[in-house]
Image (tube, rainbow, N blue to C red; front, side, top):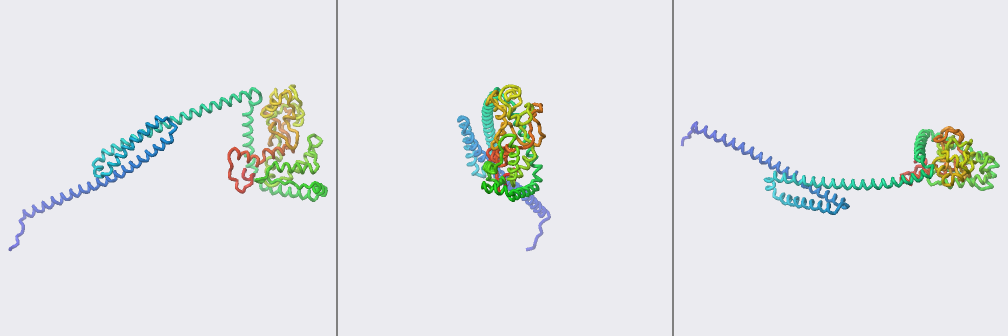
Amino acid sequence: MAFRRPHLRQRRTCEKYKAELEDKNYHLHSELQTEVDSNRQNERRIRELEQEYSQCEQKIQNLNREIERLEHASEEEIAELKFEISNLKNQLYQARKDDQDKEKYIFSLEARTTARDILTDQIKRATRQIRRKENNLHQDLAREQRRHYDAEAERDNEIIRKQLAEGGIDTVVGDLENERNEKRRWLYERYEKWKAKEKNSCQNILNLQGQILALQNNPPNIQQIGMVGYRFPIYYGRPGEDPEDWLRDIQRFIIASQINVAPGAGQAPGREEAFGLVVSCLAGDALNWYNTRVKSKNWRCNNLSDNLGVADLNAVQDLGAGNNANQIGGLNTAGEFQGKAAAEIGRIGAGVATGVDIIPNGTWDEDWSIAGGEPVDNAPVASNTGGGLPAVTIALGIKLGQLLYLFRTAYTTVEHLKQTAVFGQLMQGDMSVEQFSA
């Protein structure tokens, strides 16, 4: 059978059909790819909605916790919130059931998205309502606290007015402010002097060792100490060393050494000798504390003006009872005492109190808190300068009774215990109290 070539026209028709089929195939392929992309987008949207669903569940859990935290709120409000949460849970449960049918979910994607938005808005509204109610509760609590604080302030004001009526308390705030400023100055001064502390410590230790060696090589001292049976009570100021115990030991040592430190002008050399003995028994942190806090300083009495009409603190101690201008009662009426001194005079009685009630007399147990005594770098100011408050008396140098008072009330370990009681125990480790407090 002879081969017949297709007619040219037939060949063109086949090519045309083939081109049309290829074109349709391309369009179908594009539509299929579009459908695949759409399915992927729908699946991604499903995952996003599932994540949103999980977030909704988390918000519901947060709302539940919020409800538990607000149990002190009114029961009616909590019941309303729980009812709203229950409705939201029912809606979420229904949405979860609908998610099981993926194909139906894809067809209803847009409608479900709207439902999710509505549900999210409802949750946000519920959350805002809870926050508003929480804020209202906090505001109520704050108002109640303010009323409580106002009541306490009124009570404190009443107490202060009563104290002011009794006299002498109107300067307490100023005294506290002055004390705070002075403490700040002390801290700054200690920082400045700390740089040279190690060098001074070494030199002081060498001096102390030389003094001890000289005392040990002095036959009268050896004989006297051997007879009494007391050794030098050295105080280092380490953690665990109680200043009170050392003060009792140094008192026994001085008495055993037959040093006369009784009050009075005749025993001034004995008190100076005892002062030097006390300093020679200091070592380590205790000696550093003495060198930075006490040595070469003057004694300021914050509660005594410089207009008392007498030359020094011994003369102030000799002031008698009465209400004349040169007596304790008259000076107090004139406003020459403040703080604890004025309060003590008011407690004893203006016509009964004497100078001994203000200036201590006892060496071993002197209480300088009434006069407001403290060591300062300021120049001396005599008690008869005549300036009047706020100018105060500043005596020259630190005496034996004042030094023992500082060890009893202001030494580093004592201040450390005070701070521990107020602020809580800090981690000290193996540092000494002097190093730790610095």
